[in-house]
Amino acid sequence: MTADNTRTLAAALSSGAVVLDGGMSNQLEAAGHDLSDALWSARLLADRPEAVVEAHLAYYEAGADVAITSSYQATFEGFARRGIPRERVTGLLGLSVGLAREAARRAHAKGTARPLWVAASVGPYGAMLADGSEYRGRYGLSVAELERFHRPRLEVLAAAGPDVLALETVPDTDEAVALLRGVRGLGVPAWLSYSVAGDRTRAGQPLEEAFALAAGADEVVAVGVNCCAPGDVDAAVATASRVTGKPVVVYPNSGETWDATARAWTGRSTLTPARVTAWERAGARLIGGCCRVGPETIAGIAAALHGA
Image (cartoon, rainbow, N blue to C red; front, side):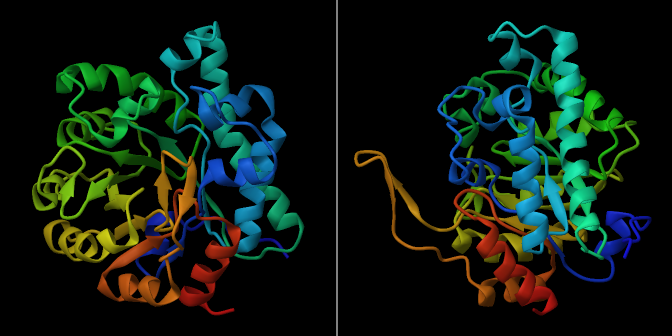
């Protein structure tokens, strides 16, 4: 059976919830790949592209409707530090979209009948620095400087033909403004997703103020949060829906905690089906997971939203 992929993702959001995938890095690590590198999962675009296809395929087969590309930490500047020229980086950014498309093709060939979409990941400036500053924001750069950093990558990713640009893990309203300016005129819809702590961005701005930036942006089809604790999502969904009137995107971490001393994850996952259905009732239309969320959890989310 061949899936009908002619319907846009934006149109799909108007008729119900859509399932996102889980963490790319944890899926690659589970397959035995070493990501202890400043380029993180983006390194495998150059070194092991087939591994990226397999990771995407695992999520599609688990029930994800949308795969988020492995371009989160893929930047011209980051690859340049490894001696990779700009033309090659342009190709790798485009490849990230192509690998997700190939995974969708394989899923359809194996019998998946539902439409499958691709979101091109656009990580924050701090992800390129690889020093944890994406969880703080406030880089000391102006909005104009941040826009100059993001726009070339946005142009390349848009030209590769994703269904949507995922402006994700944004810690700071300055960076959100830069990204919203950067997507203008590209002809590809986008979602804007903040990394948050409680009811504020990682940089400390109120979420009401942060979400309001996207309310009038025609390019933005959804607004929300990712890479946060599941407990931070509840209030964020209500605020994003009320402030913007747009569909809400949420994909939190598992809820486990990283113990830096023991260098291990502790606790248990708090990303439950009950939470997922509550978010859907509150206005979330794109729902998945981020760090420490794998195919098994995504299968549970898909079952909660769409049935077994």
